[in-house]
Image (cartoon, rainbow, N blue to C red; front, side, top):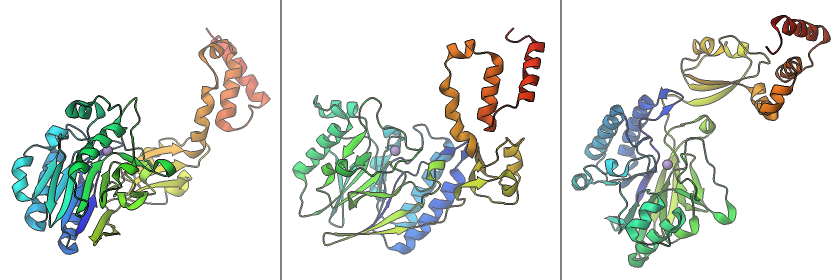
Length: 376
Ligand SMILES: [Mn+2]
């Protein structure tokens, strides 16, 4: 059995006011072509199909187009579950009709987790839902958090699961190895729960031959190779700039699991560029770029000037100023009101320029403040 494990498509995602739709279309068209030559038996999308519960119409059109092409041209079963960004019911629209076309979309959580068997391999489809929803659905008051909820769902599956067969589960959540947590998160994953823990212990998943996870945007395994996040298809935040995105080709044979990362080229890469403004103006790129300027002083209109060389510039920070940001918190409202204005200015100057305000300059400041009437 050969599976292509993908997750976190986030169709319709906007990063720093830039729509990722064109990049997503480019990537998914490439994925379809790749699937035609990979001889894969099944495609998995482990949650967060869309970026929002109410995706823009262009996002819905793209998903419609991609799924239609997958079913008509690649002709393999496609499994999709809802993630925490998706609307469970909306994603499930038409699902019972699409089933006859080998398109399996599981949006809402069911009392009995859905199982689909392909070539003798069982696929369990476990969409994301919050623990309150699952508590009511299973009528189990002992469910207090996401881990309890997942445990109850998996226990139900295990009651009827035949361990002699190959069992794969598709899930969306924050699965960690509690005894050795090394999971790597990014800035574009929305918290799964507010007020209670969002983690689920990896031990709960031990009985499955492969666990196809979605939610964390960095590709990574959890404890075992066979329990893994394929990661998002594209870089969706500055914190992901250094990652290498992939989709995972999973081969299951006689109880053995082999993973092969597949790298597809994005339309634009996303990177962080550090340097002096002057140096950067000698470069040029269409990539999505976050600048970290090393200049000590602010450069007038820097972003607009850089945009002429980097049309897809996404953000700009001053590397030196970034660390200083914290210092401004050292005064509370009361001390700000009581401190003489000239002292506040000297302090501001010191923080901003990293050097003391010279006596002659201090005098200028004092006389100016006197002229304009100090605090009045
Ligand atoms: Mn997610």
